[in-house]
Length: 403
Image (cartoon, rainbow, N blue to C red):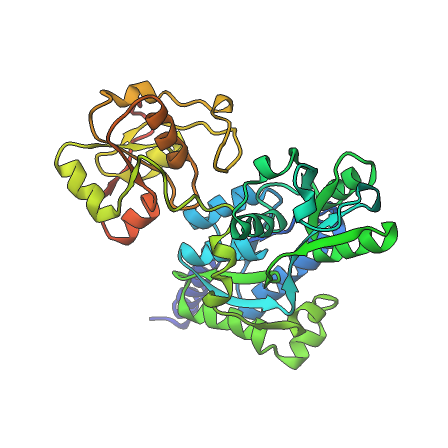
């Protein structure tokens, strides 16, 4: 073979390798707490630079997205929509449950605080009973930590307080306190302490801690890339890090993390209760046995999720959820046609996206209220079924769905 032909073949091989590398670009999702800073250029520069540094050190292209909706980010962990996730502790904790490996986190810890204005005359959490509470969004880490305290004290927020209102940002919840629209507010420790210092307010309660912003990588990413990402964060090359600009400070403060650090935050407010009166909670194996005896399993997730993959034999009965993810939710805000589940004396099973998905819980509550006598709750839902290696199926886009 001529040298020119060999050279051409070599160039083709290089081009193919380059194309393959581009096709294997790391999809990186960055999310932050609902503070006003997440909408600023500084936030995007800081974490965008961190993602680009990781890509450069790992020798891979980065496809970057910013997730300002933490509900969607939590859903993304279940669908494994990103290769690398950078975000708050509850997002990383959820990612670990669904097939990601913890890599590193910023040093320090996150906490939330319950604070009161001086004008409210509330000096303790016990005195806050019957007062007005202002919270950041329901899927913020601060609200998760606050719910953990509610659970620990055995209280339900909406019955303990005269009113509970969620705000878009931590700062907005604090403004509600400042302008007399609330008596007690929850915010992350830094913002809470700053507010108390400015307004001579009171700290009523401090939650348990959670890890700072962390990084998790999908377990199916090739081993070599995973090792390069770990080395970039935990064993950075001195020359490389010196040229990384202001992101070098974040990298130097990174420390190793393990799944156990997320155990606490992974069991907080967004998790459904572990008991439900009049309903039997069942495992994947029990569901399979019940279906073998004729019980019907209803998948209460969205149409998109059901079409993509669902438990083999499950029927689609969507629960369209607007109410809060809590015990005592307002069913009137939701849409769920439980009558389509058939005879009230027949065994029915409801499932969705696992222990932190409230749709199946609410479906069971609705079924019991309508007089269904044999209601089973598959709390572990689709993730548990898949983890057990049990059969799943999909619905072609062209096929019509019936409920």
